[in-house]
Length: 223
Image (cartoon, rainbow, N blue to C red; front, side):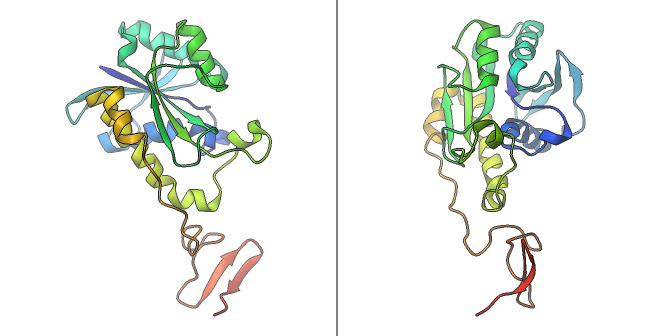
């Protein structure tokens, strides 16, 4: 059984924020496996498990809030008596450009409070993690990680979450080193300057009538 823990914060006010991208990846995996809505609460986490494409997976989203994530991780490992080699922690990283993926087999928490808690509770840095780039904060770091993605990022977020979910599957099948060789060089496509958001949304493309929605209202696009 491979255990994948996505770090994030519970509560609607945190849904879709940069700090919760680990939850978005687990939700995508659950959706692929047909497990959406089947999770149950145990060990201070929302947990769903089963077999998917020949993989035995446990997907866990700690409900302890980010700074105490390690409590939930320790409980999950203890219940399943799982070795650290079977654990992957998925977390955001503002030290990486938006859209970058980075596997590591071990290492420091890098200032990430969720990873810091996991390291402290497990008493070791020797566990695999997948960091997902959320971009360098242009303002206070706390405000940045708790903010939602910008329009040009939202237009590519599905592709990033899909790639990260693929990366988790590769880890579960082939281990950290092979997954790193494949995904640490992943490059998300550049933002489409002609389409910064979905049709009908602010900064999205114009409709057939040549009118697009802006922050100040609907405007006709000039030739």
